[in-house]
Length: 499
Image (cartoon, rainbow, N blue to C red; front, side, top):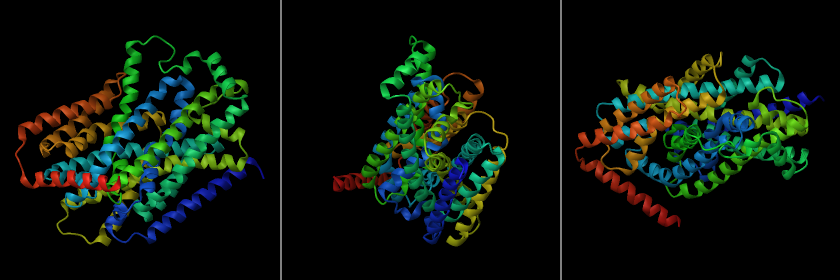
């Protein structure tokens, strides 16, 4: 058999496995809460790997190695910022959000939690949250479909649209029927595939160039600045802005609905400790593999006297050259896993925003659970179609598309989530104005086109506006106070029991 036949066979096995998991989840999904949150019964290992896989997307397998290949370790500040942000998110946000969403009227989406937590009778906060989720996730889902099209185009000389349609179609099927549980269980398999691929390919490339010393000596000779976290130059104002921007990616974690919804689905708040250890171990190994892969790619392709057409395919190209075709096929499947795990999670959150946070607000009657599940599936389909239409003519790199959506969520929801969990005096008007101010700042800053990543000013503007408006509009509510105290006590008791 030809190499491409082996690789296509591996992809076929992968696609079949994802569909089988989706069917299994479909058989386990009975209610609306099952479809949106897996019945709040997600074990720590599933939550950890699912959060990691849905977080990283095609950026981990393609965007980050490509950036390191082109610019060197100065791009690794993104990985450092993400690692810090992810740890803080698991350590402080996860247990309290899991407890608070249950205490506050069993909220199953972020917008419904904010409405219940702040007793917003106007419904404006819930609607605005749902709209923001739909706007930024449409960009995010579209970036995943672009990654799928680019993948098939670069790996098989296939048509971009055909590749995009195949990736979108399989992801849509297992998400449509399997819901949150299907997305989470496929994420576990996909996360493990990503980590293994990110460890195997750099190791094989290092062996091919003669060993680690020879590999990094070659990189130093070819691109002296690549092995410096500061780009090999003096620490200029531009470099400082670049580092702040890269570290700013870590701020985004507190506001990513498709990640923090995994915290809400944990069995109990104490599960966050085990999940944090598993999740951070997976993340550090995967990021390390991506960074090393990008660096070693410089030495490998120089020694082979070949060039990479698209820097974002550096890991794919090395895997196809260095590994047996069937193994290379599973590495290629790991790239699709990175893309599809994120897309599936985002489709579920979009569906919940449409059904829970928009439809139920305007519905005149209380629909049955079966009706809500059907509507949820219809919304998954609708969002996927719109995102696919946007991806027909991709504009910008995968990293830039993901970066904009990441900034939008981080600046819109991050400060509000943190304040809602840790500050008693946040009000519905403070949260609403802060959220809108953060989202508007991201769009305005992106249009302005400065070097500073838009999440940094957006996050700060949201935080300041939310605090100022809350202080101006705060009125003590005994029910809110009791819920806050009950949440703090529940987290403390569960953590003490776990330890």
